[in-house]
Length: 138
Image 1 (spheres, rainbow, N blue to C red):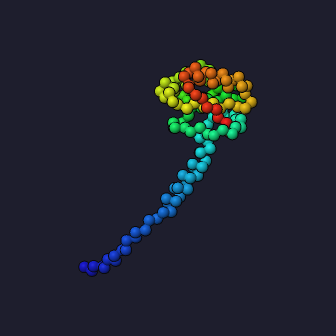
Image 2: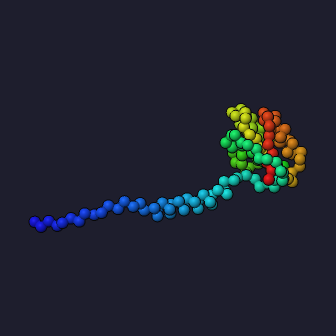
Image 3: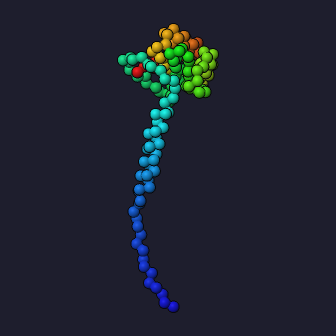
């Protein structure tokens, strides 16, 4: 029996990072494409204002929107792009404030909507238990 001399293979201690870079590039592209789509809601033209932004201690504020036709939209419980009635707004806001009384409420009113509709919405939110309501501007 002839024994062949085994060559000792030298261990390669290098890490091949090319696959990791490929994966990171794919993830970056996915996030760049999906990030603008995450901003859901109704397209409204917000009025301009020079106020300072509100500090949100809570994770996410509840946003109620009034479009230029005077329809209400709410981003809690259901489709945020579907118009809802005053009763639904009252019911959902009441439930949210029952679980978290310090929840931040914001109103997005289109600059073309009648001021009366925005005041009507703010009165409705106050009746639902909101202590204070913020207005969203650009």
